[in-house]
Image (tube, rainbow, N blue to C red; front, side):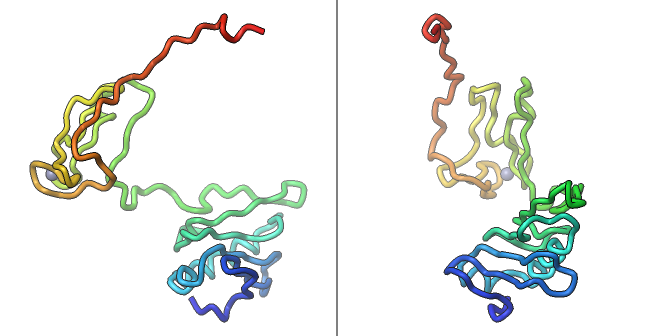
Length: 176
Ligand SMILES: [Zn+2]
């Protein structure tokens, strides 16, 4: 974006003065390189958020801001219900799994849902059964051993021993 659109308050705080229907300013937190690289839609969307009823102080966008559904992704705003504040059901967006390659079930015993599968060939690359590793099919560069596709993440060069790590707690130790 053009940094001339902003009043720069600090190295990382950029303000857009209220204009049009904006009720409050908009503030983006980012360094200059991030501001320059940001999609202009962030500007439009954070200004739109600033027009919403009941908005408190300012519409904000964090350094990861990018084009969202209504708010920019990385947008933050508070609304006062005493001032007609809105509740937005879809401010940032609806989860359409954009770019999501790995999702897990949690707090249920479900080895299939706890495990990680290669997003290219579907082979199980990390098997998990509760806290135990049951399969490890990543090479030392974090790539699927079957097809060589890199899995997103940071991996050790070999599987560790994770385990349950459950410890007994003696309530008597906490008695007043
Ligand atoms: Zn694969």
